[in-house]
Length: 264
Image: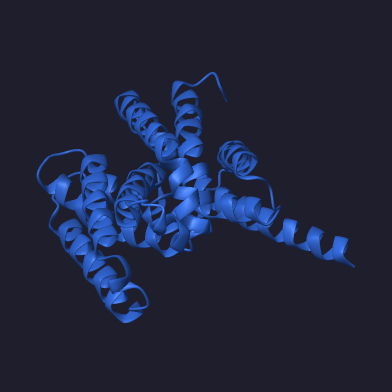
């Protein structure tokens, strides 16, 4: 399968996305903000379809919409916490706007449809270049803020007393989540972002590893699931996103089962 250019591009894209989604998802699950990635993907879908209407790349609209929503969520802070009805309405409106834009499109409708469930085999070399830049920027930003972010996550009161800017960290982190979500949507689609962003991180956190080991393990597991999904898709002709979702859920359940057996 590696004799084909599109398969080599798909494997490279999966590598770039997994290296970002694993560590970012680890912090996302640890901070209890897993719903954020789902929310940002829905808002990003409206941005992607809007970008297509303007003749722009869907990745540009997806990243821009998700980034704007992430910054606003970070600035709102606790004011939106627990308001499930309001968040649900915003997500519904965002998906409705995206559906309207998709309906009005007279061309490139297939590209917008692929955003819902992903199209890793359709990633072009040009998009691969953008993924390189986005991944490098995300990893650099996460590396800079990792220590204060971990401190603020585990002991927010003490971190605030020590002068750590909690709201600024929240805004910057959600901006990184938005970019990672835009990347992940190229692989799994906006409806299955949880599969690569949350499942590997949640599985690794069950193991109780140290932060550095946990970040590395989350990236490795995300990569294994992404590449495993590609390989299984090649041999079974089933969608890659299906296999990634199945592998993510199976890994989480197997770790939980192993922990129960060990406890007994």
